[in-house]
Amino acid sequence: MLIPDMLSKATLLSLPRMAVVKSRALRIILTALGWLWIGVAFIGVFLPLIPTVGPILLAGFFFSRSSDRIDRWLVSNRYFGQTILDWRAGVGFSVRAKIIAVVSIAASFTISVSVVTEHLGLRIGLIALGVTIALYVVSRPTKRRQPETSVKGNASL
Image (cartoon, rainbow, N blue to C red):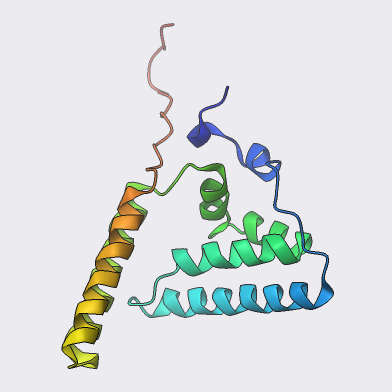
């Protein structure tokens, strides 16, 4: 049995996918939602307070239910395809991705709580939501690094 974080991209691409819905109207809606979340992730690349991983995972979900072709394009993308494949395989996020996510969540919710609203109830709600999201990210599986092979010297078995 293979360890999830050691799976090759070809193996991950061959994992069972969700069935595309039969309703044409629902496929159109799901495809539109997928592109919407791709747009949010794209904006997040340039605005550090907007996350990119969550929207990409949402887009991956919507495309997996609406279009095999777009889903294959998304998971084959060199920038964010591996994140979706890892998530679908249950591998989780790298420590670096978790740190970036938690710092981004803390920064965006801090700005929202301190600048955007003065309503105490809304502030408490935003703090609770931010903490909940951060705890969720931290509680996901952590992707282990693949062992590096030594090029120096002779490797003994």
